[in-house]
Image 1: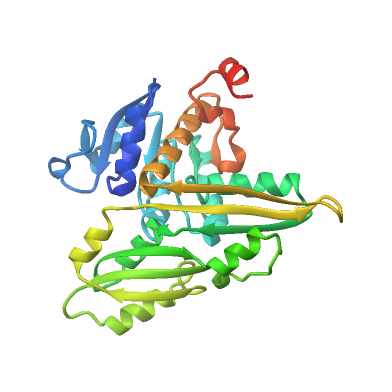
Image 2: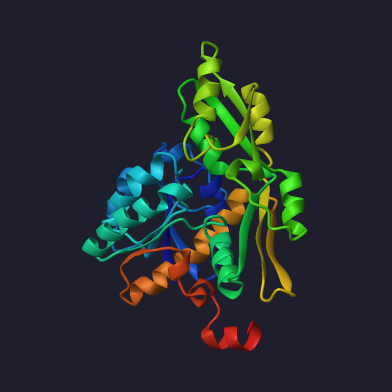
Length: 324
């Protein structure tokens, strides 16, 4: 039985909790939170502890599933957890993944631990699709579209701005660009050509709305390269929107094997709950990290580095007999 710790209990933490509860080969040692543990009522009756108690569980947890945000939480906390525990996280700031990887790889190797980073559906599942499609169709172009749906990372980044009470952000594909790719036209598209980002933001009564809108639209790695719409609404309106955290997207590879024959490869996801699906991906990779750590693997890994068989609860024999 794989012993799991869950760090953080927001939307993603709840999704991970549900996924771990469904995994017959996993046992949750505890949910670790910065909040008062007595104030937390998880979706599953797992033990809840203060994050300050985490070190008491050193040697008793096979893998920590980290459910913090990418804007400020994971960059500042993962390295500390990795000194004593194996970890999996969903760090999704694409431009900063190389430096994040280098930092954690050094720490993990020094402490003989194992970390899987940037695990989710993008980066993660979509990353694998881009790599696979490009390997089998080298003469072509990649296209990735997200949405329409709620981006947890972008919503979290807005909520970190001074004066913001609550926020939700929708990523919306631009239909003209999407159809152009589907028709095999191989268009040249810049980042902002593919998506619109629409934000719904609740702010404090004395907040400077103009400054907040400017901060959002100029935020590097999140909004600066996109057409962005900022709507100021009430906290109740944001909370109503947060009841449905659907998302999805598409990965395409369009290209040719000869001058006569063209091909279009597509992977699509339609998700009723972004955090629940991301939590399921994190949990599957938690299984992989626990297994590989027992084999003595250390350092930092991405979805590219983990053999896919390690994600499944099925044995090698069962995989060959049922899925190959």
